Length: 157
Ligand SMILES: [Zn+2]
Image (cartoon, rainbow, N blue to C red; front, side):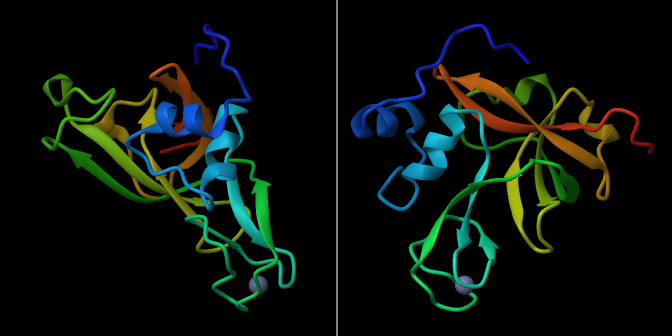
């Protein structure tokens, strides 16, 4: 994808909140979105039991530990759920008139059940299917990086 505009990887909290609005940037999610600025997809990982989870929360849902922190994942995974939106509320970067807009939930390679939802670029929506391998890629909206997926080249189907 285009890496044209250099993106400041260090924005202050107010700038981070503005850059990713209407997504909710708060104390719990700021490390997650700061990862986006650095083009890293981060999950929260528990230091006590090793469980990874999304969305970011201040405590581990598996063992209730509060010793958790952000950790980057590879972004490799498989399509777990695929929806093609033909209409919907106005959203940045979404043009329903150009055809269905794919929304996929990807099961990330690092852990069973660890999933992240975004869109897929580079493949006609009608060719997407559950089970296809994807990797992380980045697009820019509002001048800041947003994570998307791209089908892994060479993956069949
Ligand atoms: Zn835990």
